[in-house]
Amino acid sequence: MTLPVGIHDISFATTHYALDHAVLADRLGVDVDKFYLGIGQTHMSVAAADEDIVTIAAAAAKPILDRHGLDGVRTVLLATETGVDQSKAAGLYLHPLIGLPNAARVVELKQACYGGTAGLQFAAGLIARDPSQRVLVIAADIAKYELDTPGEPTQGAAAVAMLVSADPAILRLDDHSGLYSADIMDFWRPNYRTAAVVDGKTSVNAYQKATQEAWSDYRRGGGRDLTEFAAFCYHQPFTKMAYKAHRHLLESQGHNPESADIEAAIGHTAHYNRTVGNSYTASLYLGLAALLDHADDLTGLPLACISYGSGSVAEFFSGTVQPGYRTHLRTAANKAAIGSRAALGYERYRQLHEAVSPIDGKYHPVEAETARPFRLAAISGHKRIYESR
Ligand code: COA
Figure 1 (cartoon, rainbow, N blue to C red):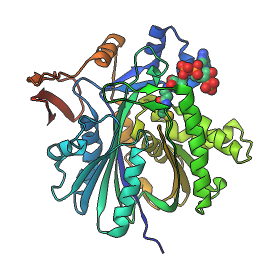
Figure 2 (cartoon, rainbow, N blue to C red):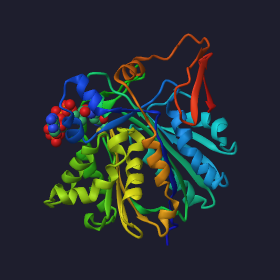
Figure 3 (cartoon, rainbow, N blue to C red):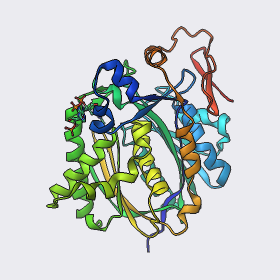
């Protein structure tokens, strides 16, 4: 029998600010229902000047270390596509902030929004080799698109941290996994840009095709039937995308779903993403956390997870919800992370969006703004200096 490996704990954090899409719609002269209903987003998380993926990653991971300690943690995998350095792994900045072990490998992973799933699967492989080990996987991103473009309302930010272990308390991963990768330019960010370039319509089509192909590969490998799953957690660049992809997948397999069927399969996964916005690598796992926090008892039921990263790589994988999982959830903390965000006015939103990092190597203190536990205090000598609040 294969060793049970999977998600033992899951925790998420988001930024200090939230921008209401009603504010954005008003400024852009757009009917707000295009955002609320058309793309399925009500708000988006926005980073304060003293927040970045390191500060939100630390905030997501700390509760996991507080609960479980560091025993057996010899690998930390941080997936992001909004890294703060081209060489140094962002996870290394977490050492002094949350006390990561020195006897560990700490690596940053990148493949657009798919990177967190790469981390999860690499972690499962390491644990299969040595079940005494546990791996901290963190997916953290701040989604940024140009102002006044179609992508603007699909920004957002969050980090999800997961402790992956043998004999997991929350989700046991199935052995079968379906893969699909292809070279496509649907979304990318050259090194000289802070905002992504996206061909929105191409990305919607590429996402749907990749989902179908990854599903086919999953089935060829002996995966479960579509009708077996209690719910489907999709990557959600905007929540409507999950609904589109699921309908596409069902129809491609000869089903003719009613809207209520789609809602039953997807609905709970969208609670957090709808108000947090796109969090790239973290998005799928925010969907998983929302499902676990909101659905009726899922004990023993199989879940499908569909990961998509533009460019592109997709993976269809699955797992079984473990007995007693509810006692391990962080539902109150998750809701508080979202509910405690400060409302962001439009002028400050634009200032934050247009701010550029200093590049002269001098000492640049960053004014305190976030109420979250960790902040970027200064940039000095081209070094980022973080502090706990
Ligand atoms: N009320 C309700 N719905 C409305 C509406 C209104 N007043 N006005 C428009 N809509 C609907 C449209 O019908 C459309 O729905 P549909 O897709 O089901 O047909 C939806 O709102 C979006 O409208 P559209 O005109 O297509 O929006 P857009 O051209 O501004 O682009 C995205 C939308 C999602 C393509 C764009 O925001 C984007 O590119 N985002 C980035 C996506 C991304 O990150 N991809 C990479 C990762 S997968």
